Every structure is written in C-alpha cells, then in structure tokens.
Length: 301
Image (cartoon, rainbow, N blue to C red; front, side, top):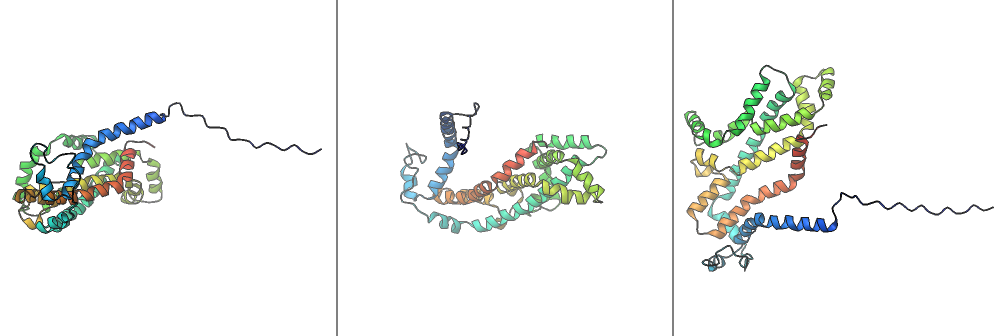
C-alpha cells in the first residue's frame, strides 16, 4: 500500500502585537514630529539659503515682509561665490586650524583626566571618597559666570593672558559632568573582570588601561563629543583670553566678522554655514556611539 503524501505545513501567521502602534498612529506620530521639527530647522534653512543668495535678493524683501520670508527662502539665482568671498574676507582657514587644535587638545585632556578620576571614584576605596564625590557633583551647580572674574585674575597673574593656556590647561583637570558620567558607567562593569585580572597579576593601572577603558569606549566617545562641541562653540573663552587676531577661533572670528562686515549677510551666513557643517557631520557619523554611550551609562548588567 503506497504511503499517502504529507501535505506541507504552512507556517502559522504571526499574531499582531496588541501593544504595537497601528499604521495610522505611526503616520500621525511622524506628522507631529515633522511639524515640531520645522521651527527648529527653519533658522538653519534660512542660514543656508541666505548664504546662497545675491545681495539684491536679500535687501529686495526688506521692509514689510522682512528678510525672513517663506517666499524668499529659495535663492534666485543661486550664488555659490559667497563662500569663496567669505573665505577671502576673513582668515577662516586660520580660525579653523586654531579651533581644531584647541578641540583636539581639550578632548584629550578632558577625557583622559576625567576617566582617571572616575575610575578612582567607581572602583577604588579611599578615605573621604563620598565627601569628595559630593563636592565634585556640587560644582556642576555653580554657574560659570560666578568664577569668571577670579579665574581670569588667576590666569592673568600666571602670565597666561594672550595664550592658549587658559583654554587648554583646565581641560586636563577633568570635568565634573564627565567624571560623573564615567563613574556611573564604570560602576556597571562586573567586578569579576577586575578580580580575574588581579589574580593574573595585573596592577590597578593595567586593569584600568587594558580591561576598563576598552569596555568604556561608548562612554568615552560621548564625553569626547561633548567636549569637542563645547570647545568648538566656545565664544567667551577666546573673548576673555585672546588678544591676537592670529589666534582667534571660529566662534570669535565670526563675531569679529559681524562687527566689521555686518552688512554682508550673504558672506556672514556662508561663514556660519561652514562653521556649523563640521558639527553636523560629526554628530551624524557619531550619533550611534553617542546614543549608545548615553544609554549604557544609565543601564545595569
């Protein structure tokens, strides 16, 4: 007797998650987020469009409609020459080199010093640890304007006025926010890893360098990104301590450009676009690491 063919087993249709949002809810959510994003993106769009406009278009709409007009948002004709004109008017490349130099130095100093201090708070036991950690956290509530005058007097007495030292040396003393962030991350690492390394004969310094730091890359990258953006956008630091135009940074140089050529809106916006573009690209390429670092800092294994 021939065996009867076995009918193929059809996979069961997955039941829909009752908590999953419907397609209509997803569309409405995206529409709401897009509507909320427009006010935030409008100044950026106006800056980019103005950087491509001829001066005749910028001043043609002055008056009742103003230069911020939806009808005037698109440049006509597009004038790319505003960018090389802006680069010729002020030494943007020199400002860019100065800014990148400060960013690299401060990122290295802030991340390295903060990681060392955070490791001590998170993994080592010493007298007065809780009191010192509380004092360190309390400094985050102190506005920078309160310490601006005494810090300026101190750096001037040290002979650092007119140099990059006031803008770079404090970064090597650590940042309270970065120390707190890294301390929280280091505390989530299993203590068994350090114990196993100690059994193998590793010193505390070796454990810090070869065990803890490789696992803390997302948190370190987050601190580096914060420090880079803070130094990149810093205006008051160069305003207080720099008096040589050859040492100006981009943020301070743009302010000087506005003071000298305030009527050249197209070139000013071209310079501002060039100033903003590296930060946008940095955040675009580092957003996954940035979000991962923030998420893992608050998590537990």
